[in-house]
Structure formats: structure tokens, C-alpha cells
Image 1 (tube, one colour):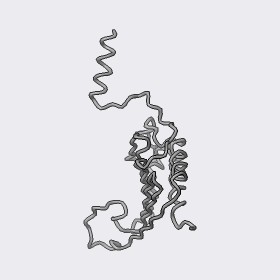
Image 2: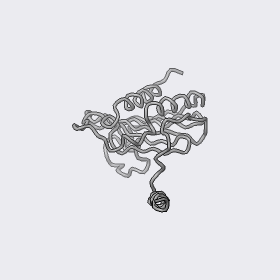
Image 3: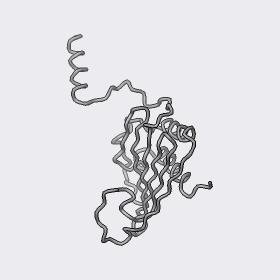
Image 4: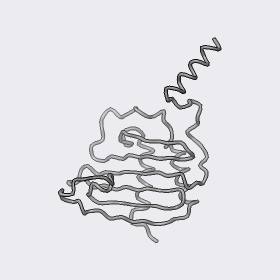
Length: 170
């Protein structure tokens, strides 16, 4: 029995499965290696309006917005399309402690919780799309599905972060 258990754990490790005992609700430590990238799209507008916010643990925040594909894809190659040049970029430095508080708030609302992956709403959201990628305390997270469908509570908190850095009062 003990040999079978050891073999199962070894097989899971070799297959690339992460340990199930990792708690996704962690205490976030300040680190320059922590980052979160949020992509928000309004699909009810033509052309599609995009916003992207990247937060780094060192306090660097970059906001991109407009209709250009370059907002969500730095390697976009359709330069002949309308709206290619419609991109506004804003870079600011904020207190790293504030960024850490944002990271902790997102973690507390389930950012790193992989239990909710692949649990989508029955009816897809067609007007807004929100995607997120993050690395916090060496735990990586990527959600391919629309966060509005998977976890509406987390989606609203992510949208609040986008709103916080969109036209901030400095």
C-alpha cells in the first residue's frame, strides 16, 4: 500500500501536476518578481475597445488603452487595419506597498484559486471580456476563460484595479 502511494505521488509529480496542498489564499510578500496583468475588452463597441494594466511588485504600473491590437499583443502584425495607431500608454510609479495591498486583495478574492478553473457560466458573456495572468510569491496563474463567466466577484475586483489606474488623479 505504501509503495502504491509513493508511486502515485511520483507519477503525479512527473505528469506535471502541482501539489494539491498548496493554499491559494496566501500572504503576499513584497517582491519585485510579483506581477499581475489584466486585459479588459468591450465587445459591444465597434471597433473593440481594449484596456490592459500591468502591475509590478516594484511599483511600476503600465496602462494601455484604445482600439489597437498592440494593446493586448505586442507582436501584432496587422498594421494596415484601422485603429492600429489608436493606443495610449501611461506609465506611473506608485508605492510598492500599495501594489502589494492590491495583490493581497486579489489573492483574498481568489486570484490564485485554481479550483474554479473550467467552471464557466451556462450563458457566455458577450459584451465584456476580462482575462488575467499573474505571478505572486512564485505561484503562477493564467485564466484562459472570461473571468466574468468563471468568477464574477473576482472580475469586479479586477475591473476596480483597471478603473483605479485609468485616468488617475496624481
